Image (tube, rainbow, N blue to C red; front, top):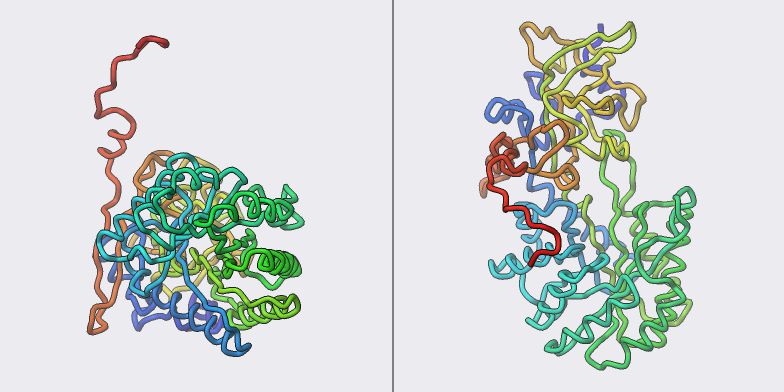
Length: 479
Protein backbone atom coordinates (compact mmCIF):
# COMPACT_ATOMS: atom_id res chain seq x y z
CA UNK A 1 0.00 0.00 0.00
CA UNK A 2 1.34 3.43 -0.92
CA UNK A 3 2.62 5.73 1.80
CA UNK A 4 1.37 9.24 2.45
CA UNK A 5 4.64 10.72 1.17
CA UNK A 6 4.17 8.82 -2.10
CA UNK A 7 0.73 10.40 -2.51
CA UNK A 8 2.14 13.89 -1.98
CA UNK A 9 5.09 13.40 -4.30
CA UNK A 10 2.91 12.09 -7.12
CA UNK A 11 0.42 14.96 -6.65
CA UNK A 12 2.78 17.93 -6.15
CA UNK A 13 6.34 18.96 -6.77
CA UNK A 14 7.61 18.14 -3.30
CA UNK A 15 9.55 19.15 -1.26
CA UNK A 16 8.89 22.85 -1.79
CA UNK A 17 10.79 25.93 -0.72
CA UNK A 18 8.62 26.04 2.39
CA UNK A 19 7.77 22.41 3.18
CA UNK A 20 9.88 19.29 3.50
CA UNK A 21 10.18 16.06 5.46
CA UNK A 22 13.09 15.11 7.72
CA UNK A 23 14.72 11.68 8.08
CA UNK A 24 12.15 10.72 10.72
CA UNK A 25 9.28 11.36 8.28
CA UNK A 26 8.18 14.47 10.14
CA UNK A 27 7.14 17.72 8.47
CA UNK A 28 9.38 20.79 8.29
CA UNK A 29 7.78 24.24 7.91
CA UNK A 30 10.35 26.82 6.78
CA UNK A 31 12.92 24.35 8.16
CA UNK A 32 11.21 24.49 11.56
CA UNK A 33 11.02 20.95 13.05
CA UNK A 34 7.38 20.95 14.05
CA UNK A 35 7.55 17.78 16.15
CA UNK A 36 10.15 19.48 18.35
CA UNK A 37 7.72 22.39 18.86
CA UNK A 38 4.91 19.97 19.70
CA UNK A 39 7.04 18.01 22.15
CA UNK A 40 8.02 21.22 23.93
CA UNK A 41 4.66 23.03 24.00
CA UNK A 42 1.92 20.47 23.26
CA UNK A 43 -1.25 21.01 21.24
CA UNK A 44 -3.43 22.68 20.19
CA UNK A 45 -1.18 25.59 19.36
CA UNK A 46 -0.77 28.56 17.08
CA UNK A 47 2.66 29.18 15.63
CA UNK A 48 4.05 32.33 14.01
CA UNK A 49 7.26 32.14 12.00
CA UNK A 50 8.27 35.80 12.18
CA UNK A 51 10.93 35.92 9.40
CA UNK A 52 8.18 35.18 6.85
CA UNK A 53 6.69 38.62 7.48
CA UNK A 54 9.87 40.44 6.49
CA UNK A 55 10.37 38.09 3.55
CA UNK A 56 7.00 39.02 2.07
CA UNK A 57 7.51 42.75 2.56
CA UNK A 58 10.88 42.54 0.78
CA UNK A 59 9.35 40.46 -2.02
CA UNK A 60 6.55 42.96 -2.65
CA UNK A 61 8.95 45.88 -2.74
CA UNK A 62 11.17 44.03 -5.21
CA UNK A 63 8.20 43.17 -7.45
CA UNK A 64 7.08 46.82 -7.62
CA UNK A 65 10.66 48.01 -8.11
CA UNK A 66 11.10 45.61 -11.03
CA UNK A 67 7.82 46.68 -12.64
CA UNK A 68 8.54 50.39 -12.27
CA UNK A 69 12.02 49.95 -13.71
CA UNK A 70 10.66 47.93 -16.63
CA UNK A 71 8.25 50.71 -17.66
CA UNK A 72 10.36 53.69 -16.54
CA UNK A 73 7.61 54.58 -14.07
CA UNK A 74 8.46 57.87 -12.38
CA UNK A 75 6.19 57.55 -9.34
CA UNK A 76 7.20 56.10 -5.97
CA UNK A 77 5.94 53.00 -4.15
CA UNK A 78 4.90 52.91 -0.45
CA UNK A 79 4.18 49.67 1.41
CA UNK A 80 1.57 49.93 4.17
CA UNK A 81 0.60 47.10 6.52
CA UNK A 82 -3.14 46.63 7.05
CA UNK A 83 -3.28 46.31 10.84
CA UNK A 84 -6.68 44.61 11.00
CA UNK A 85 -5.11 41.44 9.58
CA UNK A 86 -3.32 40.99 12.91
CA UNK A 87 -2.90 43.61 15.61
CA UNK A 88 -0.45 41.61 17.71
CA UNK A 89 2.59 43.58 18.80
CA UNK A 90 5.02 40.88 17.65
CA UNK A 91 3.57 41.14 14.12
CA UNK A 92 3.82 44.92 13.96
CA UNK A 93 7.32 44.96 15.43
CA UNK A 94 8.55 42.48 12.84
CA UNK A 95 6.88 44.34 9.99
CA UNK A 96 8.18 47.72 11.14
CA UNK A 97 11.77 46.47 11.04
CA UNK A 98 11.38 46.97 7.29
CA UNK A 99 10.58 50.71 7.46
CA UNK A 100 7.02 50.28 6.28
CA UNK A 101 3.93 52.39 6.88
CA UNK A 102 0.53 51.54 8.35
CA UNK A 103 -3.18 51.47 7.48
CA UNK A 104 -5.88 51.58 10.15
CA UNK A 105 -9.60 50.87 10.23
CA UNK A 106 -10.77 51.49 13.81
CA UNK A 107 -10.56 53.99 16.65
CA UNK A 108 -8.71 51.43 18.72
CA UNK A 109 -5.93 51.26 16.13
CA UNK A 110 -4.91 54.77 17.09
CA UNK A 111 -3.63 54.09 20.64
CA UNK A 112 -1.54 51.30 19.10
CA UNK A 113 -0.05 53.82 16.65
CA UNK A 114 0.68 56.23 19.50
CA UNK A 115 2.30 53.49 21.62
CA UNK A 116 4.52 52.46 18.71
CA UNK A 117 5.57 56.07 18.21
CA UNK A 118 6.45 56.50 21.89
CA UNK A 119 8.59 53.35 21.72
CA UNK A 120 10.41 54.65 18.66
CA UNK A 121 9.06 51.91 16.36
CA UNK A 122 7.59 54.58 14.06
CA UNK A 123 7.84 58.35 13.84
CA UNK A 124 5.27 61.07 13.29
CA UNK A 125 6.45 61.24 9.68
CA UNK A 126 5.30 57.67 8.91
CA UNK A 127 2.31 57.44 6.61
CA UNK A 128 -0.80 56.37 8.54
CA UNK A 129 -3.69 55.76 6.13
CA UNK A 130 -6.94 55.89 8.13
CA UNK A 131 -9.70 53.94 6.43
CA UNK A 132 -13.17 52.84 7.43
CA UNK A 133 -16.43 54.49 8.44
CA UNK A 134 -15.43 56.64 11.38
CA UNK A 135 -17.45 56.87 14.57
CA UNK A 136 -16.87 59.82 16.97
CA UNK A 137 -13.93 58.34 18.87
CA UNK A 138 -12.07 57.50 15.66
CA UNK A 139 -12.62 61.05 14.40
CA UNK A 140 -11.36 62.43 17.73
CA UNK A 141 -8.18 60.36 17.65
CA UNK A 142 -7.44 61.37 14.06
CA UNK A 143 -7.94 65.06 14.79
CA UNK A 144 -5.84 64.92 17.99
CA UNK A 145 -2.99 63.18 16.17
CA UNK A 146 -3.12 65.66 13.29
CA UNK A 147 -2.88 68.46 15.83
CA UNK A 148 -0.03 66.60 17.56
CA UNK A 149 2.18 66.66 14.48
CA UNK A 150 1.47 63.38 12.65
CA UNK A 151 2.09 65.14 9.38
CA UNK A 152 1.55 62.12 7.10
CA UNK A 153 -1.58 60.81 8.77
CA UNK A 154 -4.12 60.64 5.93
CA UNK A 155 -7.82 60.31 6.81
CA UNK A 156 -9.50 58.64 3.85
CA UNK A 157 -13.02 60.02 3.55
CA UNK A 158 -15.68 57.33 3.50
CA UNK A 159 -18.73 59.62 3.40
CA UNK A 160 -19.54 63.20 2.43
CA UNK A 161 -19.80 64.58 5.98
CA UNK A 162 -16.59 63.17 7.46
CA UNK A 163 -14.49 66.12 6.29
CA UNK A 164 -16.62 68.51 8.36
CA UNK A 165 -15.18 67.14 11.60
CA UNK A 166 -11.57 67.65 10.53
CA UNK A 167 -12.28 71.15 9.25
CA UNK A 168 -13.56 72.07 12.70
CA UNK A 169 -11.30 70.07 15.03
CA UNK A 170 -7.92 69.64 13.27
CA UNK A 171 -7.38 73.34 13.89
CA UNK A 172 -3.78 73.16 15.11
CA UNK A 173 -2.43 71.16 12.17
CA UNK A 174 -0.41 73.22 9.71
CA UNK A 175 -1.49 70.99 6.82
CA UNK A 176 -3.91 68.08 6.53
CA UNK A 177 -3.56 65.55 3.74
CA UNK A 178 -6.86 64.00 2.76
CA UNK A 179 -7.77 60.84 0.85
CA UNK A 180 -11.06 59.90 -0.75
CA UNK A 181 -12.22 56.31 -1.06
CA UNK A 182 -14.06 55.64 -4.32
CA UNK A 183 -17.14 53.43 -4.12
CA UNK A 184 -16.43 50.69 -6.65
CA UNK A 185 -18.91 48.30 -8.20
CA UNK A 186 -19.06 44.88 -6.56
CA UNK A 187 -18.42 41.63 -8.41
CA UNK A 188 -21.28 40.56 -10.72
CA UNK A 189 -22.25 37.67 -8.42
CA UNK A 190 -22.41 39.85 -5.28
CA UNK A 191 -25.66 40.69 -3.50
CA UNK A 192 -25.28 44.42 -4.16
CA UNK A 193 -24.28 46.41 -7.20
CA UNK A 194 -22.14 49.14 -5.59
CA UNK A 195 -19.97 48.92 -2.48
CA UNK A 196 -21.47 50.45 0.66
CA UNK A 197 -17.97 51.83 1.38
CA UNK A 198 -16.59 55.01 -0.11
CA UNK A 199 -18.01 57.91 -2.09
CA UNK A 200 -19.80 57.73 -5.41
CA UNK A 201 -17.85 58.77 -8.48
CA UNK A 202 -20.34 61.54 -9.25
CA UNK A 203 -19.92 63.11 -5.79
CA UNK A 204 -16.11 63.26 -5.67
CA UNK A 205 -15.67 66.48 -7.66
CA UNK A 206 -18.25 68.34 -5.61
CA UNK A 207 -16.76 67.11 -2.33
CA UNK A 208 -13.34 68.41 -3.33
CA UNK A 209 -14.49 71.74 -4.79
CA UNK A 210 -16.93 72.65 -2.01
CA UNK A 211 -15.28 71.31 1.14
CA UNK A 212 -11.58 70.58 0.63
CA UNK A 213 -10.33 73.18 -1.82
CA UNK A 214 -11.68 76.27 0.02
CA UNK A 215 -9.48 75.62 3.10
CA UNK A 216 -5.82 76.16 2.13
CA UNK A 217 -4.62 73.89 4.97
CA UNK A 218 -6.39 70.88 3.47
CA UNK A 219 -4.85 69.07 0.50
CA UNK A 220 -6.36 66.22 -1.46
CA UNK A 221 -3.40 63.83 -1.46
CA UNK A 222 -4.83 60.46 -2.47
CA UNK A 223 -7.64 58.57 -4.16
CA UNK A 224 -8.28 55.15 -2.67
CA UNK A 225 -9.28 52.03 -4.63
CA UNK A 226 -10.24 48.68 -3.17
CA UNK A 227 -12.30 45.71 -4.30
CA UNK A 228 -13.07 42.59 -2.30
CA UNK A 229 -11.84 40.18 -4.95
CA UNK A 230 -8.29 41.38 -4.43
CA UNK A 231 -5.68 41.78 -7.13
CA UNK A 232 -6.65 39.18 -9.70
CA UNK A 233 -6.27 38.88 -13.44
CA UNK A 234 -10.00 39.13 -14.22
CA UNK A 235 -12.07 41.34 -16.47
CA UNK A 236 -13.81 42.69 -13.36
CA UNK A 237 -10.55 43.81 -11.74
CA UNK A 238 -9.19 45.51 -14.86
CA UNK A 239 -12.52 47.22 -15.54
CA UNK A 240 -12.72 48.69 -12.05
CA UNK A 241 -9.05 49.74 -11.98
CA UNK A 242 -9.39 51.40 -15.38
CA UNK A 243 -12.50 53.32 -14.33
CA UNK A 244 -10.73 54.42 -11.16
CA UNK A 245 -7.65 55.62 -13.04
CA UNK A 246 -9.71 57.70 -15.46
CA UNK A 247 -11.28 59.34 -12.40
CA UNK A 248 -7.82 60.02 -11.00
CA UNK A 249 -6.80 61.71 -14.25
CA UNK A 250 -9.97 63.80 -14.22
CA UNK A 251 -9.35 64.90 -10.60
CA UNK A 252 -5.66 65.61 -11.20
CA UNK A 253 -6.59 68.26 -13.74
CA UNK A 254 -8.66 70.22 -11.22
CA UNK A 255 -6.54 69.34 -8.15
CA UNK A 256 -2.80 69.76 -8.84
CA UNK A 257 -1.74 68.62 -5.34
CA UNK A 258 -3.33 65.18 -5.88
CA UNK A 259 -0.33 62.92 -6.48
CA UNK A 260 -1.09 59.46 -5.08
CA UNK A 261 -3.36 56.46 -5.41
CA UNK A 262 -3.89 53.63 -2.94
CA UNK A 263 -4.72 50.41 -4.78
CA UNK A 264 -5.59 48.65 -1.54
CA UNK A 265 -4.66 45.11 -0.64
CA UNK A 266 -5.49 41.75 -2.02
CA UNK A 267 -2.30 40.07 -3.17
CA UNK A 268 -3.23 36.42 -2.69
CA UNK A 269 -1.43 34.02 -0.41
CA UNK A 270 -0.84 30.34 -1.00
CA UNK A 271 -3.79 28.21 0.15
CA UNK A 272 -2.67 25.01 -1.55
CA UNK A 273 0.65 23.36 -2.26
CA UNK A 274 -0.46 23.87 -5.88
CA UNK A 275 -0.06 27.62 -6.47
CA UNK A 276 0.73 29.34 -9.75
CA UNK A 277 -0.05 33.02 -9.19
CA UNK A 278 2.53 35.12 -11.04
CA UNK A 279 3.05 38.13 -8.78
CA UNK A 280 5.55 39.86 -11.05
CA UNK A 281 3.42 39.61 -14.19
CA UNK A 282 0.36 40.91 -12.37
CA UNK A 283 2.13 43.94 -10.91
CA UNK A 284 3.85 44.58 -14.26
CA UNK A 285 0.44 44.79 -15.88
CA UNK A 286 -0.94 47.08 -13.18
CA UNK A 287 1.97 49.49 -13.60
CA UNK A 288 1.70 49.36 -17.39
CA UNK A 289 -2.05 50.08 -17.31
CA UNK A 290 -1.75 52.96 -14.86
CA UNK A 291 1.00 54.55 -16.93
CA UNK A 292 -0.86 54.06 -20.21
CA UNK A 293 -4.03 55.72 -18.88
CA UNK A 294 -2.08 58.65 -17.43
CA UNK A 295 -0.17 59.16 -20.66
CA UNK A 296 -3.41 59.00 -22.63
CA UNK A 297 -4.84 61.77 -20.42
CA UNK A 298 -1.61 63.78 -20.35
CA UNK A 299 -1.21 63.75 -16.56
CA UNK A 300 1.80 62.67 -14.46
CA UNK A 301 1.68 59.14 -13.08
CA UNK A 302 0.73 58.89 -9.39
CA UNK A 303 2.74 57.60 -6.49
CA UNK A 304 1.38 54.19 -5.52
CA UNK A 305 0.42 52.99 -2.04
CA UNK A 306 -0.63 49.45 -1.16
CA UNK A 307 -2.01 48.14 2.11
CA UNK A 308 -1.23 44.44 2.21
CA UNK A 309 -2.59 42.58 5.22
CA UNK A 310 -3.02 38.87 4.55
CA UNK A 311 -0.04 38.98 2.19
CA UNK A 312 2.13 40.44 4.97
CA UNK A 313 1.25 38.09 7.80
CA UNK A 314 -0.86 35.20 6.47
CA UNK A 315 1.90 32.80 5.44
CA UNK A 316 3.73 33.23 8.74
CA UNK A 317 1.03 31.37 10.66
CA UNK A 318 0.29 27.72 11.40
CA UNK A 319 -2.25 25.99 13.60
CA UNK A 320 -1.45 22.51 14.87
CA UNK A 321 -3.78 19.89 16.32
CA UNK A 322 -3.60 16.37 17.66
CA UNK A 323 -6.00 13.62 16.57
CA UNK A 324 -7.69 12.52 19.78
CA UNK A 325 -10.20 10.01 18.45
CA UNK A 326 -11.01 7.94 15.36
CA UNK A 327 -14.67 7.35 14.50
CA UNK A 328 -16.24 5.23 11.76
CA UNK A 329 -19.77 6.62 11.49
CA UNK A 330 -20.95 4.65 8.46
CA UNK A 331 -19.49 2.70 5.55
CA UNK A 332 -18.11 5.83 3.87
CA UNK A 333 -17.41 8.42 6.56
CA UNK A 334 -14.23 8.05 8.56
CA UNK A 335 -13.52 10.78 11.12
CA UNK A 336 -10.36 12.04 12.78
CA UNK A 337 -11.43 14.13 15.78
CA UNK A 338 -9.01 16.93 16.74
CA UNK A 339 -8.25 18.63 20.05
CA UNK A 340 -9.52 22.02 18.84
CA UNK A 341 -12.29 23.68 16.86
CA UNK A 342 -12.45 25.00 13.31
CA UNK A 343 -15.34 27.32 14.15
CA UNK A 344 -13.49 29.09 16.95
CA UNK A 345 -9.83 28.78 15.95
CA UNK A 346 -10.00 28.86 12.13
CA UNK A 347 -13.29 30.73 11.66
CA UNK A 348 -12.66 31.58 7.99
CA UNK A 349 -12.76 27.84 7.21
CA UNK A 350 -16.26 27.71 8.65
CA UNK A 351 -17.64 31.15 7.78
CA UNK A 352 -16.51 31.57 4.15
CA UNK A 353 -15.24 28.10 3.28
CA UNK A 354 -11.61 29.25 3.26
CA UNK A 355 -9.12 26.48 2.54
CA UNK A 356 -5.65 26.29 3.97
CA UNK A 357 -2.65 24.11 3.27
CA UNK A 358 -3.34 21.04 5.40
CA UNK A 359 -0.56 18.51 5.97
CA UNK A 360 0.12 15.85 8.59
CA UNK A 361 3.03 16.69 10.86
CA UNK A 362 4.21 13.10 11.37
CA UNK A 363 3.79 9.54 10.01
CA UNK A 364 4.58 10.47 6.41
CA UNK A 365 5.85 6.92 5.85
CA UNK A 366 2.49 5.36 6.82
CA UNK A 367 -0.29 4.27 4.44
CA UNK A 368 -3.00 6.88 3.87
CA UNK A 369 -6.78 6.95 3.93
CA UNK A 370 -9.59 9.36 3.10
CA UNK A 371 -10.83 11.18 6.21
CA UNK A 372 -13.03 13.95 7.55
CA UNK A 373 -11.70 16.16 10.33
CA UNK A 374 -14.04 16.97 13.19
CA UNK A 375 -13.77 19.75 15.77
CA UNK A 376 -14.64 19.76 19.45
CA UNK A 377 -17.81 21.85 19.49
CA UNK A 378 -21.30 20.39 19.40
CA UNK A 379 -22.05 22.24 16.14
CA UNK A 380 -22.48 20.02 13.07
CA UNK A 381 -20.63 22.64 10.98
CA UNK A 382 -17.39 22.18 12.96
CA UNK A 383 -15.57 20.08 10.36
CA UNK A 384 -13.03 20.26 7.54
CA UNK A 385 -13.25 17.72 4.73
CA UNK A 386 -11.88 19.10 1.44
CA UNK A 387 -8.75 20.81 0.21
CA UNK A 388 -8.30 23.70 -2.23
CA UNK A 389 -6.94 21.35 -4.90
CA UNK A 390 -9.14 18.32 -4.17
CA UNK A 391 -12.62 17.32 -3.03
CA UNK A 392 -11.08 14.67 -0.79
CA UNK A 393 -8.91 14.85 2.30
CA UNK A 394 -6.24 12.24 2.97
CA UNK A 395 -4.26 11.54 6.11
CA UNK A 396 -1.85 8.83 7.29
CA UNK A 397 -3.38 5.79 8.93
CA UNK A 398 -2.22 5.16 12.49
CA UNK A 399 -2.92 2.90 15.46
CA UNK A 400 -4.40 5.10 18.16
CA UNK A 401 -3.47 2.56 20.84
CA UNK A 402 0.26 3.17 20.50
CA UNK A 403 0.73 5.99 17.97
CA UNK A 404 -0.08 9.68 17.79
CA UNK A 405 -1.06 11.79 14.80
CA UNK A 406 -0.63 15.55 14.49
CA UNK A 407 -2.12 17.79 11.80
CA UNK A 408 -0.99 21.23 10.67
CA UNK A 409 -2.96 23.98 8.95
CA UNK A 410 -0.62 26.48 7.33
CA UNK A 411 -0.82 30.13 6.26
CA UNK A 412 -3.37 30.88 8.97
CA UNK A 413 -1.65 34.03 10.25
CA UNK A 414 -4.21 36.64 9.17
CA UNK A 415 -7.58 37.46 10.75
CA UNK A 416 -8.27 34.18 12.57
CA UNK A 417 -7.56 35.39 16.12
CA UNK A 418 -9.59 38.57 15.72
CA UNK A 419 -12.52 36.83 14.01
CA UNK A 420 -12.54 34.02 16.55
CA UNK A 421 -12.39 36.35 19.54
CA UNK A 422 -8.88 35.82 20.89
CA UNK A 423 -8.95 35.36 24.66
CA UNK A 424 -12.68 35.95 24.90
CA UNK A 425 -15.72 33.71 24.99
CA UNK A 426 -16.07 31.28 22.13
CA UNK A 427 -18.56 28.64 21.05
CA UNK A 428 -18.88 25.85 23.63
CA UNK A 429 -16.27 27.73 25.71
CA UNK A 430 -13.45 26.34 23.60
CA UNK A 431 -10.30 28.04 24.93
CA UNK A 432 -7.91 30.09 22.82
CA UNK A 433 -4.86 28.00 22.02
CA UNK A 434 -1.35 28.61 23.26
CA UNK A 435 0.71 30.70 20.85
CA UNK A 436 4.38 30.12 20.05
CA UNK A 437 6.68 32.56 18.23
CA UNK A 438 9.50 31.15 16.11
CA UNK A 439 12.36 33.39 15.05
CA UNK A 440 15.99 33.36 13.95
CA UNK A 441 18.75 34.79 16.13
CA UNK A 442 21.73 36.74 14.81
CA UNK A 443 23.57 33.52 13.97
CA UNK A 444 20.57 32.11 12.08
CA UNK A 445 19.60 29.62 14.79
CA UNK A 446 15.92 28.89 15.42
CA UNK A 447 14.48 30.27 18.64
CA UNK A 448 11.05 29.78 20.21
CA UNK A 449 9.09 31.88 22.67
CA UNK A 450 5.76 31.16 24.34
CA UNK A 451 3.69 34.27 23.66
CA UNK A 452 0.55 33.06 25.42
CA UNK A 453 -0.57 30.02 27.37
CA UNK A 454 -3.80 28.27 26.50
CA UNK A 455 -6.73 30.26 27.87
CA UNK A 456 -7.82 29.05 31.29
CA UNK A 457 -11.27 28.78 32.83
CA UNK A 458 -10.62 31.59 35.31
CA UNK A 459 -10.35 34.18 32.52
CA UNK A 460 -13.69 33.00 31.13
CA UNK A 461 -15.31 33.13 34.58
CA UNK A 462 -14.27 36.79 34.87
CA UNK A 463 -15.61 37.68 31.43
CA UNK A 464 -18.92 35.95 32.15
CA UNK A 465 -19.39 37.80 35.45
CA UNK A 466 -18.79 34.96 37.90
CA UNK A 467 -15.74 36.61 39.46
CA UNK A 468 -16.92 40.24 39.68
CA UNK A 469 -19.45 42.08 41.81
CA UNK A 470 -22.26 43.56 39.76
CA UNK A 471 -23.51 47.06 40.39
CA UNK A 472 -26.87 47.52 42.07
CA UNK A 473 -29.73 47.72 39.53
CA UNK A 474 -31.27 51.16 39.16
CA UNK A 475 -34.80 51.98 38.13
CA UNK A 476 -35.04 53.47 34.66
CA UNK A 477 -35.22 57.25 34.90
CA UNK A 478 -33.52 57.52 38.31
CA UNK A 479 -30.72 60.06 38.62
